[in-house]
Every structure is written in C-alpha cells, then in structure tokens.
Length: 92
Image 1 (cartoon, rainbow, N blue to C red):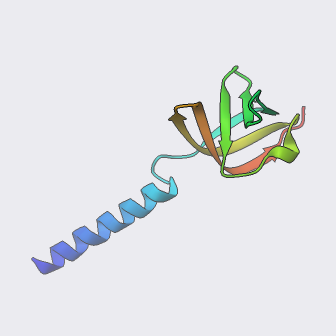
Image 2 (image 1 turned 90 degrees about the vertical axis):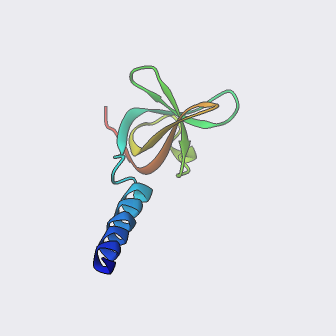
C-alpha cells in the first residue's frame, strides 16, 4: 500500500512539473510585426489581424520587424497575452 502511494505521488509530481513548464499545454507560435500600441506596450500584430501583448522577453529592439514568436498563450483583461519563450526574425 505504501509503495502505491509513493508511485502516485511521483506521478503527480511529474505531471505538475510538466504543467508548470508548459509541456502539457504546449507552446504556440505567432508570426507578425512587433509594434508599440498607443499605450506604449509592446505587442505582436499577427498576420491574421490579432494583437498579442508580449510578456517574458523584451522585444523593444525588434519594433517594426516581422518575427516568429513562440510561447504560451493566455487571455487577460487587456486582451491576448503571449508569454514569449523564443523569438526569431522572419525574412520576407
């Protein structure tokens, strides 16, 4: 019985760690132009017209450039939020 409890705790720990790192939820990639909105917040204006508030990385130096940003998507009070894990420039 004690062995089963330890296995159960180990499984729950692994699942929790995977969820915390985004491995279960999965990362999304957004391609678009880095811009500053009228409030001075850095956003990515995606090719489909959606705007994503950028969190997690400072993309100020990339304003005006087209990028492919990968990260975790969320919906906040201010709109769609992309917590960026990686970003790479896109050549047109």
